[in-house]
Length: 193
Image (cartoon, rainbow, N blue to C red; front, side, top):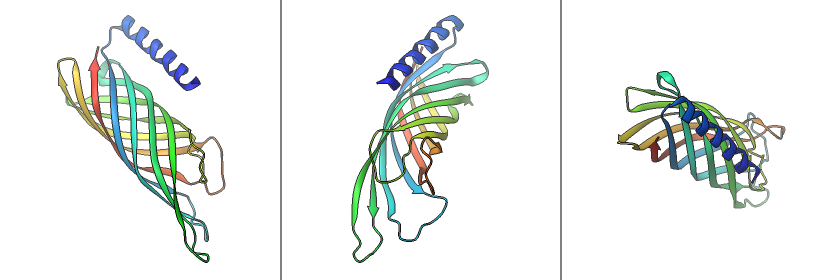
């Protein structure tokens, strides 16, 4: 609940500054699908294999528009996905699934160009909500994306393919920390005000 409280305070500050500055801003709701891998910087003999399955994301974003096509983008997102864990073959190989749930707060720079296109990227603060047998994905991650908007008056539809890397700077440092990274796509609707 603390995360939600801070997000609402930040949203109120952004909205208040928007009314003073008279910049056009956007609020967006989105749904996303992702394909990630759980990788470590070194392969360990005898360790289990981790195979993330398709994950899903749901969230909202607020973009405070600045001059020259720039904008500051923040919000809150919720990721959930299953990770298949396969043991080393000793003497018998077994597998099981664990559910990974992460809450994310992005702080992105958003740049619009050629009227319909945008790029966005920057740090994302992640908080893992589930207890798992693999390394925590809580920390500061990175998101980079490119997208397209279609406007109908003040409403918009958008598509945002992106690259995502979790726990680039983990909150809990582990030896050979396994980190989630890969590609995803978000699509949704928004409103300009």
